[in-house]
Length: 210
Image (cartoon, rainbow, N blue to C red; front, side, top):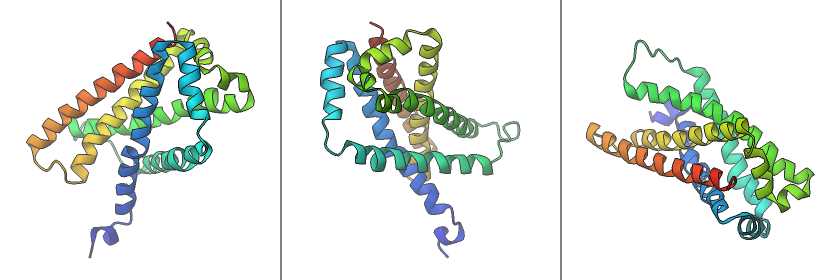
């Protein structure tokens, strides 16, 4: 009997991890690069980044089917996995178990952050067109508040950790890194990826304040 028949969650877990990389993880990387363009100033950001996105004919469909629905499934099934598992960190204190639970906790934090972020940017722009016309100024006004800047820094770091650690875990689950040595080496590659993405994200946040 196949593993997918024995365990009804087998395919859902594979789909969950796959969507975490494509398209959700890919969109995170694009979004961090997109925001890093803030370093060129308000005019460049609004006219070349925001205007380019608004000019895409199928942007609403892409937002729904390429971003929102995969993200909702990834987040929803992640909450199901979290509810079914038990930490037992004292009993199983090895690093992979701790990273597993940090992955679950970071996922919850990211979900809360996304609700705030989408509400104050995408949804706010729907109700108030001036937000979409000058997104740079809108972000600058928000991030000028220390508590809001701190919130975005936390959300950024949680997101980057979740992607980098999820990539390392996915390589193990999918049988890409089968030996301890391969898992360790690729783990360090994922750490480097996380550091680079975090640097790009922080650079983007600071660009709104320049």
